[in-house]
Image (cartoon, rainbow over all chains, first blue to last red; front, side, top):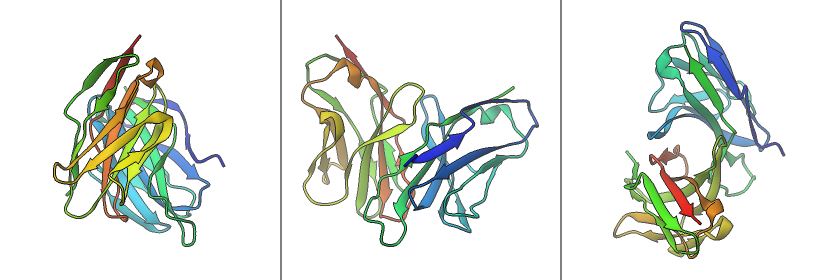
Length: 117
Length: 113
């Protein structure tokens, strides 16, 4: 199993540009999450999804959009990049689908380091 | 709403000495508690969790944590620190099985040879 895979690993954007951060998982998890990590601030939840077709805002959703058309994929969209969105972004997943066991911890991708200039 | 506090930004310990990284939490229901470790330029790796049962839980790489309901704490411990344990440690809490994890700000552990 590859686990949670994020692409790209690094990206530099100009102010006002848009991009999509990709996240896919092969563990048959129904919950997926996007966090951002800023120095000294821990991880802040941006959006999460409890299953295909269902998404919810987290603590810091402004400036971002998500979609969940399949169980495996949970892309994060930045429409108008701003310097405040310079951060490291982590995708995570948890909870197997029905019959998959009792795991409750989240599994994380390797992160995407985004710089907006 | 749930929250996590890690009161120490940095913990320094000599190699071979015991280490403790502190965590306190606040939830409205029964807590699901987790510790993660992050090495430089890497994602978060799961160390251990408390869901129910024994208050002392054991995890990866010789780490353990003690759940204390009265003090709402879940401190991470290791009897003998290694230089390779130097990393950023995050405590996280979930209020029930169906809510997202809420993370603390992280504690940087430095183990000195």
